[in-house]
Amino acid sequence: MIAAAVAAVLLAAACADEITFDTASLEAGLPAAILPEQLDAITEVACPEPEFDGVARSITCAAVLNSDPITIVVEVDDEGLVDATVSETLLDLTAVEAELAGRIETDLLASGASDVEVDVECPGTAVVIAVGRAVECSGGPIGAARPLGVTIVADDGTWEVGFGG
Image (cartoon, rainbow, N blue to C red; front, side):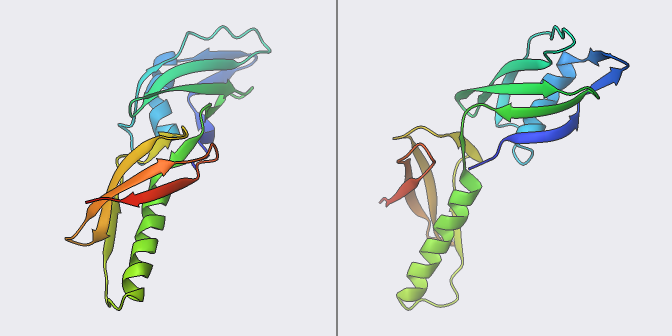
């Protein structure tokens, strides 16, 4: 799973006890802070104008990850540094791809194949975990990929795979 938090991202500036905050810059910077390897995955970021009262320095932003609505909680410290955390738990699809590739390669080698190159591709780099959610991936030896249906089976992101067609 992705630990979707980024510490010490400078998106605001502090001056004495007053924080000058640029909401537009925050909204533009959150996708790169959360998923730097897939900048177009997080869209429609909307943060309210903050009303810092000297104590509470938290902003709750809304966004869309692929097609899933997500909530991003932004905490601002006294120096104006930002910590952004996605409230929902995410499944790291790059880790799923790597594990599936390893399983397929092991099975092919056990069946007598040699010098096997395996590729697995899933759409995007992360999805919100929801039990029963299906993610359509594909994979197999290079040039012979097959559909792979990955289904999330537990709240902790445990998944199973079904081999299609």
